[in-house]
Image (cartoon, rainbow, N blue to C red):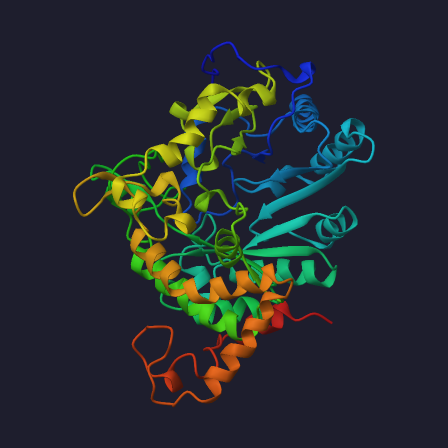
Length: 470
């Protein structure tokens, strides 16, 4: 694909001593190619952008990318090299060994290079696990909960389930002491089971860092039937996924479902896991209550500092906007810094704040929400204005629910005390709570039949065997 032309940059180039603000880049060395065919994975359709491509990042481009990425960060003490897909392990170990060699070549004295990779885990073996451990990779592993919930949509090219293969990969990571996070999507098959999903990830998988990512597959009425069939090679006449339309697939989570999922998880987490289990959404909320910028662009005031690099060097405004309208250019024609700090990209980032409808601007939880991700802003407000986030109801429910505990934890932090002290307050309140009192989660059940008893556990003993370490 030919890079779209950009205006002549009106800012210093990388050789002029400029120091850009922090940014994050997801590199896709195999493009959208994956050995799985997860039905909700919109990115599988992005291979349609590069018909005829081998979908393998060339060594010359890898060299250029690592050099420009490090140059673009200037004297920053730390630079993150983040790999995603598709499935990046399809590139093979030698590709990543070369990447490490280029990192050592171009890093400034004393500069730390952090490597991360997101994988479905099905291709991992002991050699991969040792490589990740020996080179301090942080691995993001995609797992959607217990067997039935995971296998509902995470299948291979033949439509076969992948749970056992993922658990085998997880066992290898744990046996080798690899740092890993759980990346869990929330969709129609697991949205009503937040407590069970959380307990499974925490207790059966041993996860201590978790991300819950809502599935919202946007489409048009014209393409709805095709979109419901999925985005991978098993789907007939699949369209290219674009950020357009006001319909969603049947797999997509509703705002109400997502809010309930988060609240159910939060009510377990706040009682026993503060300070030992880290849930990204809760960390982001606490940052906003505390008054510091959160680490997640979704709930930041502006965005535009999390871009995507395709296998051929094309740079896009965001991983969710890999489509022609948001192609910034190619690092073979422009230096990465010029693309990251281009006027077009700055405008893209500011639009997250400037395009908010009045309903959002006047909302009492705007400081925590900031309208969510622009990709999901295709609903209308109660007064008919466009631009409302599809998950608005869930965001409002969650942020209202956690207002008091977040304020409490923020106050503890300001006093130099650990937020985990909040668990004592919950324990004291729960000790005198009547069994038949309404559960404070607000789900409509009695305390003794809801969060007053242990979370449901996965009945699949195979999961426990697969994730057990010696």
